[in-house]
Amino acid sequence: MIDTLTGWRVLAALALVGAPAYLLQGRRVKRNTPRLPEAPGLRYGQIDGEQPPLRLLAVGESPLAGVGLDSADQTVIAGLAERLARQSGRATNWSIVARGGVTVADTCDQLLPQIPERSVDLVLIGLGVNDCLQLTGARGWQAGLATLFDGLTERCQPGRIVLSGVPPMQHFPALPQPLAGMLGLRARMLDAASAELAASRSDVIHAPMNFDGRSQELFCHDGFHPGVRGHQLWAEQLTELLAGDL
Image 1 (cartoon, rainbow, N blue to C red):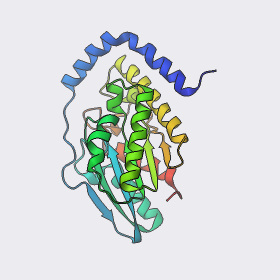
Image 2 (cartoon, rainbow, N blue to C red):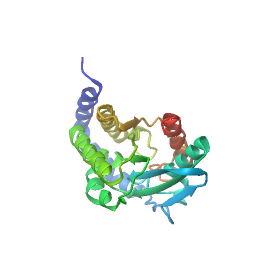
Image 3 (cartoon, rainbow, N blue to C red):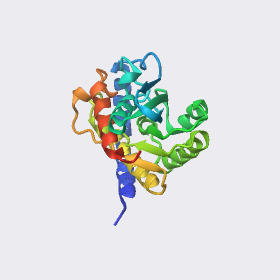
Image 4 (cartoon, rainbow, N blue to C red):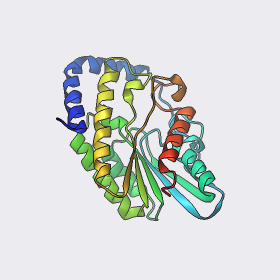
């Protein structure tokens, strides 16, 4: 009996048989999908409460950078901070180090050096879409994540690292079939690799991303990035997962 990761690797590899069709569809999607800016303004905030404050940091690709949103206050990390502050009664500080288009390798090379060298209670990592688009393999993905974990530990000694699930790309409204199906398989493969790696580490929690269906309500008008409701649902799922952990 094959394990989950092996099974997804086999399926993802078999799906690449349709590579010529994916290339044509990908070019068309890239040409027709609106380019949305990252959220303007400050990439940090605070929710008042009792001391000592919880310190949260978000690291990753375009959703964490707030692409398509009016403000970073609408991002998942701000929503998570608000919910944790409400639960705990503690003040909560949040900040973002993220950029659209980055892979896990880019994050290690380009974003990690930008992270302030001060301790935090929780780091939320949101990556995977660009690695799916770049056809990053499962082992390369795990190696990149391990490097990122070690770099984060060295720079900010997080009490907890939360590795968000790779988004279910088969549900992105902007993606046509069969391209959506192929990218969905790669997302599941990378997510299984994430879960396997997280299970081997006491400081990392894998947080599956459970977005059902192709609801446009969860997305910006580009059909590719999560909208305000998508970020809210994401924050709700993370809060439920972390209840009592902090």
